[in-house]
Image (cartoon, rainbow, N blue to C red; front, side, top):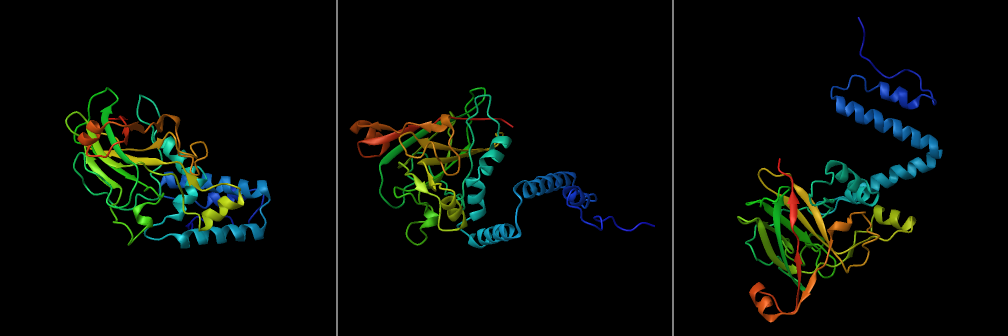
Length: 294
């Protein structure tokens, strides 16, 4: 009669990863076993490669502890850490490979923490604050060019000062600069907003200290978040970046893709402004979106 399998009784530096990986032999989930084995292999190789000292390892543990302690209902410091290390974009790129004309995807970011309110086509998502008025139009198509009717286009953005509503609780309505818009029979959507401003990610915590220690700034270029969902299509999460924004070439979270940088065109036409329900002049973004069918 044999007892339960376990790790070897003795540790050996040369075979450290192999010895630890052996302890996963009875893991029921094969994918979990694969991931843990690879993680231990890379982690042990990293420790040996840099000659990590006990003091450095203790500092790393304190950093991760502080990262967790900084998280709350409106702030996810671990997402920020993943973002500034480029891991979020890499995971997203592997999960959503470009091709077939599909609009490129980007990270969701740390501020999609509340459900956006349902709004009617043409509504404004501005519930508080000032900014340069903007009309956003677009059309959701599949890779064959067929309109996607009845899709939900979820949008959210920073205000003219570079803050999201969840960063200013009690100061602005929780649904400020958010909305979900339906597409019509031709796949079209439209709404009114303001031109978003560039902004720094929260840098008053451990991730901010990491950026400062490595000589990096915390800023993101101005952008609008767009997430398209609906029956029969694969969810697409993306950004639209304002072409005249600073930091397009040094985004703190590596989220910029060249084809997502668009002009927010200045329109000085009182008739078009009146039709859109905006003052003149205003800015106009047209953002067609291509999604995959499931």
